[in-house]
View 1 (tube, rainbow, N blue to C red):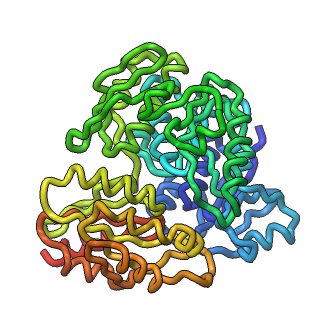
View 2: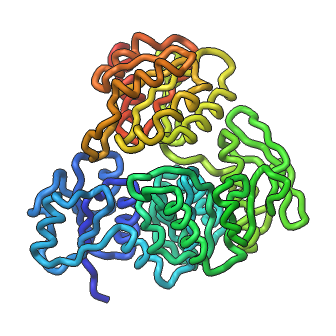
View 3: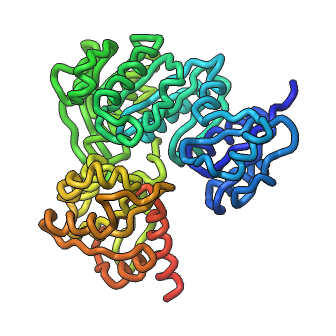
Amino acid sequence: MIEQAYHLIGIGGIGMSALAFILAERKERVTGSDIKESSTTLLLRQKGIKLFLGHSEKNLPEGKAIIVYSSAVLPDNPEYRAALLLGLPLIHRSELLRRLMEGKEPLLVTGTHGKTTTTALLAHVLTVAGLNPSYAIGGMVPSLQGNGKEGKGSYFVAEADESDGSFLKLNPYGAIVTNLEEDHMDYWKSEKKLIEGFKKFIEKVRSGDLLLWGHDDRRLFSLHPGGASFGFSKGASLSVLNFQQAGWKLLFDFTFEKREFNEVALPLIGAHNVLNAAAVFGLCLRLHLSEEKIREAFLSFQGVARRAEKKGEFRGSFIYDDYAHHPTEIYATLRAVKSTLPQGRLIAAFQPHRYTRSLSCLHQFPEAFYPADCVILTDIYAAGEAPIEGISSEQFYRTLKENCPQRVEYVPRLRLSAFLSDFLEEGDLLITLGAGDITAVGPELIQLEERCR
């Protein structure tokens, strides 16, 4: 069998790295580049992948390599431009994912929120049950020791990315559609086009029995998707009857297909994760896994990196980190974390993500921070976008200041860790929120304390 050479531009990204791990396990020749070293690039190097720091046409391998890019790679990227000039095959990340799924039965998870945790839990359950799935997940999963794997089983579990419409390139055998909310409107342009995109995805699901969708979401409900619905509503096919938060563990009851399931336990927090877990439980039942195996697998799930992840402690305060950057995600995360906090302040340090999202969701953000006792805002993380008219870090701060009842502070990113080191009090819980480099603030604080010892 002849090896195929692949070069992944932005290989350290969470979506690209998952595919790189799979290619490496398939014994393909893999190279890649990224802007800087990270824990992910170090893991890729350990797999024998040749990796370049910085983007340059010199990074492209010799010969007829397939060049893979994501929507984050701009047309002026030197490697992208060089590949075009050399006539090398260029494919989007979603096309590579589609090719890797050939010969497998793809079980895909899509939706505006909850994709990564739901995908991770599904892959974890199938792995613990001995089905040896392949998977590509948008977050590092401690119980799976990574985010991408080539399994010998028939199932391929993956996130289907709606942000750029690329989920329509995939061919799901089964799917979970968590919810549908206005996001990534720079791509979709209108709510109508967004809903049409989800409708097309749902219509592609090959096995109607293996389609589960969020019943409580009005936009999804309006599509009458068929399959089975899940939600807190009594009208859902899988109806969650109640749940309770017991520290950092969820307990919930639900009914499905004329059966009642009581005290299902999962070591996560938040009502949103009850729905994610219920959807996975329902899909696994329809895949003919036993209730006992699913329950057992749930108990050993350790969550996903950057989803209410504890980073450590700083002078008696507790430091957590979360990827949430949309108002709905922020509110759900803060509400869940608040329920675990016996005393002390809940401090939300937020880095807005992209100018387009910041502008389109601006007036939804104040309400999203309602559970927090204090909000610390830092600079907008552009993620490759150029500034646009109508939004800036100063305007974002003004909107929060005028509409949030609690204390709101603005601190530039470069000064954020120093500010927090003076601001935090014993018993506080700090959670850093955002899809950008604010994730480094927790480790910065912890290192600061270690240096002061």
